[in-house]
Amino acid sequence: MSELLSLPFMQRALAAGCLVGFLASYFGAFVVQRRLSFLGAGLAHAAFGGVALGLLLQTEPLWVAVPFTVAVALVINWIRSSTGLAGDTAIGIVFAVAVALGVVFLSLRETYTADAFAYLFGSILSVTAVDLWMTLAVVAAAVACWPFWSRWAYATFDEELARADGLAVHFDDHVFSVFLAVTVVVAVKVVGILLVAALLVMPAASARLVSGTFARMTVVSVLLGIGSAVTGLFLSYWLDIPSGATIILVQAASFVAIAILAPRRGLQA
Amino acid sequence: MTAERPSDPAVHVRDLGIAYGRREALRGITFDAGRGSFVAVLGPNGSGKTSLIKALVGIVDPAAGQVHVFGRPPRGARDVGYVPQVKTLERRFPATALELVVSGIRGRWPARCSAAEKEAACKALRSIGGEHLAPRQLSALSGGELQRIYLARSLIRQPRLVLLDEPATGVDAAGASDLFDVLESYQHLQDATIIMVTHDWNAAFHHATHVLLLNREQISFGQARDVLSETNLRRAFGHVGHEHAMLRSGSGP
Image (cartoon, rainbow over all chains, first blue to last red; front, side):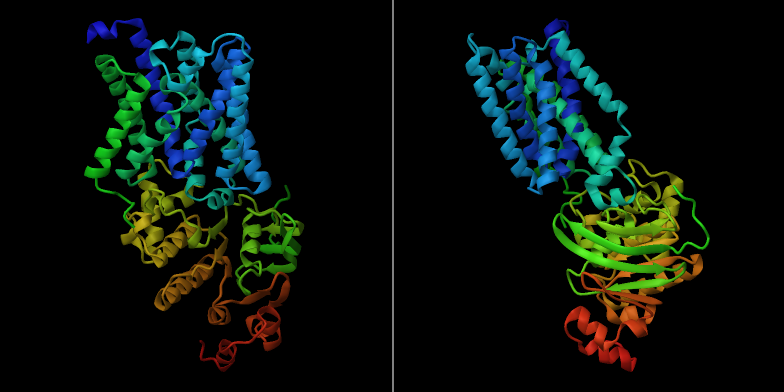
């Protein structure tokens, strides 16, 4: 074990897994309670468009994917608020456009597009120091924005009550969307575009089954998110199977176990 | 922002219009609710009652006219208690009744409740006969219990104005009677102003000092006995039910 932990790539992978596990499961608690699971999937596919643009421009793909995905999140918010269309309709429109753009960007490249597959399926063992610093910066920003937890939670419970108490709910929603978009992008390197949505949803869904308060749900979700990232990473190393998929399967196993064994607090009514 | 003057009514509404996009929900509403008054807002479904309450709370912006609460624009006023319609509640949110009441103190969702907040919340719950509900999950409460929790939440900051949107929905007759007792007791104790949307003509007739009758526009505003006339009720509802005769006879529906 100590030999494994002394490997630099494993150290980076563990750090990235813990940081991304924290971010995805923290924001995932809101995603689950706000019924925004499809937004996670939509933003992940939007990240594909950003990654493809980065590859086309021959620059660090994640640097392009971050503003691209944030822009997509804000466009989704704008469509929802300005047209009155349902959120899933707005997401369905925008993420399809982003994926189509991604395909066009990749087709415009003169070189082989095999590197794009690393972003589709994730490659946590190839996490670089730059990726790690970027993720750490997002975690630091999320922790610094801790006061938003009670605002987001209030609006998640009842948007009207939050507005009646003077909260700027629309502004808070934009802040949340930006955090969610950035979280999705930094998580892409760990589990891949195709599995990011699961990383957002599963720890929070498991936590919901054993939590009677939203604060507890948030804490349990974060613990499950970090724990499953570490467990999945070690299992993938020992079993020699893809790390991103292993993390998601560990989360799925946790969900099934909790759903079978745990008392369903608060959901029985 | 202008300072509040003692002569300002609790609520001052002039020529208020509300629209959602191109759809006009309400127009031409003009009334003052004096301090310590109890105003019942009556009207058929879709008449704009809830829109009016939302404009008074500050969560719907007027398309025309003015709304002032204690001389100021209403948004985020700390001395206003608001009881929304319970049917809009997200019941899958993991929370206890105690947390919901404490959210009324903070204006935020509590991560942890302090001992002082718990004590204040329990006191508020006790005042509506619901202290035993404090640890219960919201999803396990009946509609009537939830209404009481919302009422406790709205009163915990000791607001000078309480706005209620159909607070007796899902409450049995005894529960509704208790609710009005609590409201009237609070009103007299704090010299508070109550504005309540209701479908209960009887409650409006017997508890309210004033009635505002709507049907997308103002039909009438004044004392209950004057407003609840056959002519006004026909204009608002298109018919006069047996409730009107019983109101006039004093027996109540």
